[in-house]
Image 1 (tube, helix red, strand yellow):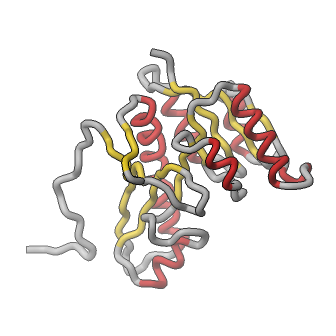
Image 2: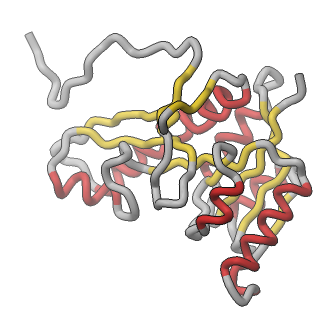
Image 3: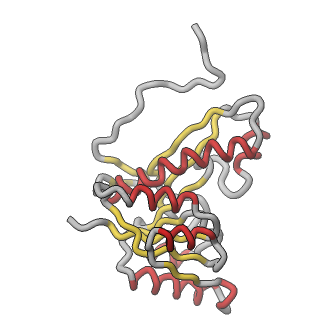
Length: 218
């Protein structure tokens, strides 16, 4: 069976892209990156892709009169590479409903919170300000609504009393680098189906332990 062909869309440094590149370097990984597409020519993620020998393309949104034309070119670029799965990894442009619907159940994103909580920006500061005990990150299928869609995989991180948005961001990012490649692998292994907006994972192993924050001692 051939590998799942994935295209990664970025706007910046591309640390999640690097995690996916590293995972794809494993000969047993069931996916390969066929394109890294950025809306910014100076995004360092493009350099990461070039080092790995991956094809890159820049489509600057400012070069187009409207979002529809911009997204039409993105769609064309993705289809030219016979993309099976689109992975948004720090792509900082809101995608229109028509584009998202065209790639329904074939486009995923990672968000630095435990969705559906803390959609949008400044997730770490908002979580700390609200005094919640857990933060985290989520890989989900993309829907037209912002930060919405069936959840594939999540990671939870306990928030300490001395936490800052910066320290929490570093912890969450470390978790992101683990769960994004894992979500791609589950999709590429055809272990996922979507029913009533819920992701069902074949042979899923659910952790048996309960996390407490603050820690409960006997």
